[in-house]
Amino acid sequence: MKRINKTLVVCLLASIYMAYGQTKRVDSRQIPGTDIIKPEFDLEALEAYLPQGQKEIDSTPTNQAPDITAQYWDTTQVRAHKNVKVDFPFKIEFQDSTYHNPIGKKMVVTSRYGWRWRRNHNGIDIDLISGDSIYSLFDGVVRFVGYSSGHGRTVVVRHYNGLETTYAHMSKYGTVKANDSISKGAFLGYGGRSGNARGSHLHLEAKYKGVPIHPEYLFTFDDSRAVRAKTIWVTKKWTQAYRYSSRRKPKLDLYTTEPEALAGIKAQKKIYIVKRGDTLSRIAQKNQTRISAICKANHIKSTSTLRIGQRLVID
Image 1: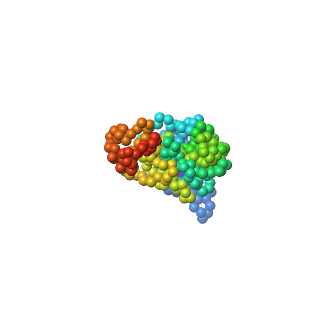
Image 2: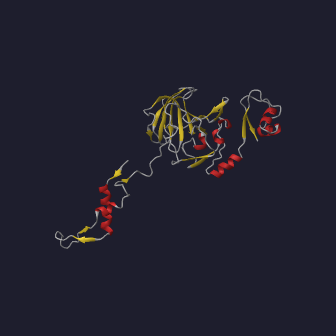
Image 3: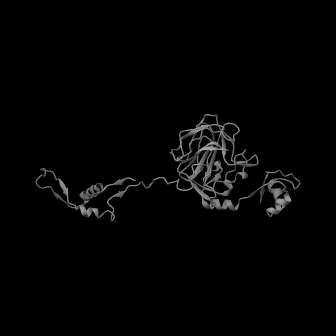
């Protein structure tokens, strides 16, 4: 912490005193025709302006970045927020209106956040060639650099608004290390296909306190590299991958105020995943609804065959 010493404070107050306080002329060394003035001030009186017991002034900047490493800071694994309860809706604020391109060239999305191969795909896949450079979307602090069985070589960056971005399937790390403070566009490593990857691509995730958020709810993945809004309210709907298809763009209902988010929660429909042994009758009974209502909401017949992993909208 930088501090300004007592002498500097006294000089500053003396300057103010010269401008507004009482003065008297210099006598024997006064230059003819010139009004040279000399301040009259009491050093002890000036010290009274300082808080009692303090002879220095704190000069810590008021716009200093928050300490985002204070809670749930784990540099040994991808997941740091285990058993953390998140209240919905929650707010995420962005200082930037754009993000840095994570691959440094035109982005082509090959698989979206959504239901894929009967399980959640909690990120977005961006096509690249092995060896392409990977960059951080925003300023932040590197929380994790290491290997994960599914993600392969991975870097996780926590940003100053609490959001974390995960960059997975790298072929090689850059020079960044855990606990490094980095700038927007910082080089993180090289793309590849490490871990459980079918072909070279960047698997990019956006999480808040460990909760995966649909990346396309926050960002546009095109040449504009736009953040959708400076303030975004996130409901549970946008954190449940099974609600979406990994093959299609989502229909966006962007909430920028809390009342909008609360209204969206009330209108939210339930999604049911068909399990082994399920029938329409059993599903209707579990969800306290009618078979006809399920059929109407999903454009199916009461005689339709259900598939394990099939998603059904429950009105």
